[in-house]
Length: 436
Length: 183
View (cartoon, rainbow over the protein chains, first blue to last red):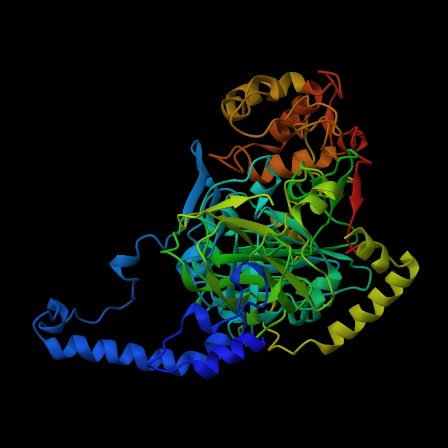
């Protein structure tokens, strides 16, 4: 930390940032997390001069500065130069509506996932629902079973919150014997983060007259799978939303249009899309997706069931496999951390395979059950090393090392893999996924 | 992780009482809406309610046997699930090795805890290319067939709203609930 301060003081335009002015706070060249904040002004000045120089020459002006640009559009699209920032689809070839698509976490920054890149898990395709023909019905242990049109629901008091949605099966390649070699989004990208706006479910349960012996609510979607699953009444009455909007616009068909459940911090399969029915009951329905799937077989032969919470996880998205460092020098490590238990309290990064750790800067605002962006400056000296990150949440839960997780749970559980992720950096600057 | 689980474990009674207090408080604190809900009649509910619970509640009238179910399975299910529930591109439905061995398939016979789940799932979701196309009798028959190829019932045993919940699957006790005590 002292070394970083010294680096800041000695940096001027005449003496740009060099390795000589910076001392590490942990092994492998990790620098103080506040370095970039302090030096942003100096970097900004340099960039400005560079652009001014381009303008001054005039001769090399690109076509888009010399002819009128494209007209307005009704709905904007990404730059055609960003064609790699797409979801990768992994579906059953015999049943193209049964599968997943991944959020390309390695192509994104900040904490919000663009709506068109939110991950998908469909059990039998995306229904094209006419909202005029869709209703939400509440029955079972209610004094007054009722149903609502979508138009009705749009008149109810709305609240917004930012939270992640993560599939219980996210990161499951981590259970494999050998580390999977794929961009990070196509390994950990069954997780996305949005601002969701909707009606507190408690408002609707209250209107229908929830009876005191109701312990579970069985939710059902209006898709061709008729996906159903049981939700504990405690969560239904806590922070569960009947969401209508995602990042300001009406939820898209693949994310549950016209309405879906959002259970902040709980596994995504409970966040039922295309929600059409809620049955209050004393017992869980024991649906296929809470018995034969989304349960975790342990080495004992017993399976963990109703493992709703998504435990703390973190991973470095920049740099990560698929990227190549362009020689020794200063880089910014950037990644995502989240916890279904609450806020991320701290993220630590190691550049020496876990021998030493440095605290990363957390991008404000840090919110409960939300993606949290962490960043840390790093001076790579060109030698091979292993990068890791680990999250600690506000309950004190710390993301486990892979060996500890596997020792406790075995490798047949499939769901709820949240171990520390390791990237090996080779001398040529390429990165690979390793178990280290 | 195990230490944390242990620390969070509370006696069931205490959890239940705390849960009840929280539940009552949460309903009381719910923001009030414009109360636009339209009453549902018992007939409305009967038309939409296809949840089937382990105790058999929700099961419709109707019946079927494995003998009847084989023809339906071969025509509607075998293309993806394979002949006799094994070897297809979709999930394995029959057989399966010991659950404490290496990489066991998780089938109806060795993993699923409740026979009623088969009926609930097949009726609402299967076959994938034409869900909700089977009659209740056909769903009972396919359910019976899946139980039969796992050697759990005979091929002439009739499955109906009374007999299906009585079929005890071998892995009924194979699950440890994490919610709420170790959550």
